[in-house]
Length: 116
Image 1 (cartoon, rainbow, N blue to C red):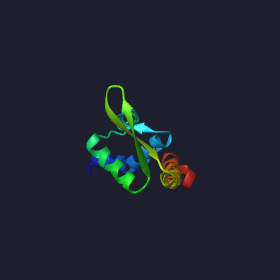
Image 2: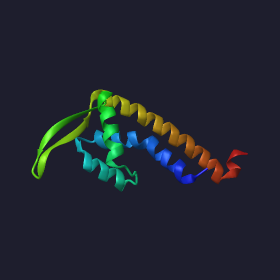
Image 3: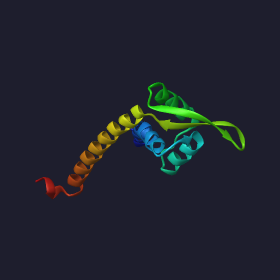
């Protein structure tokens, strides 16, 4: 078993959640979204992001608006729909549960006397 492969799978599993969290703060342009994810060490490439954004949009979780750009063609800005906000709330609840559970296990692992 390769730790790097498992780490990549874990990151892929939370990519959708991270994307929705960023977009929840307000309209976002794709390159800004990529930069923020990279800054958070969630590496994503356009070939992964665009199909995911399209899927989320088709699911009704995202909507987009075209806006004029001062430096080229119009840009597509994504925002959450009401359905997307509700979906994100569910993901947030799941994330909170999972992190609490893992932290509990880690605490017992790091302090073996606590589970005797």
